[in-house]
Length: 117
Image 1 (tube, rainbow, N blue to C red):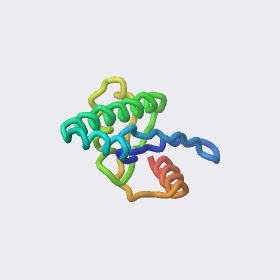
Image 2 (cartoon, rainbow, N blue to C red; image 1 turned 135 degrees about the vertical axis):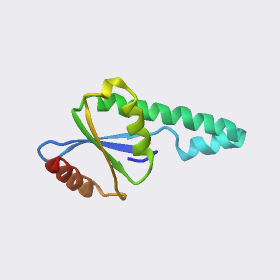
Image 3 (cartoon, one colour; image 1 turned 90 degrees about the vertical axis):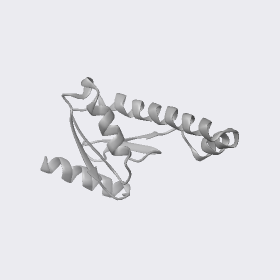
């Protein structure tokens, strides 16, 4: 995951089930907002980022065991949001820093992570 998109992958028999969640804060939104005001751009970014994390959180409620991984701090931000919400107290949530991965590398990582936990 990063600040622009997240892949929610369910560990199942092959092929894995993957859903892609995208942030609405795109380059076009940023350009449009910054031409009006830098303050407006930051407010818009925070609003859309909050919505993005809420969408991810709502989907994570369907899982018992989750690993959040990726190359940016977005995983830490999401982890902190989840830990502060009592609805996630019974969900086992792991967090791992990784480099950017291909789809196949993600699948290998997920399989190995849950085989070892």
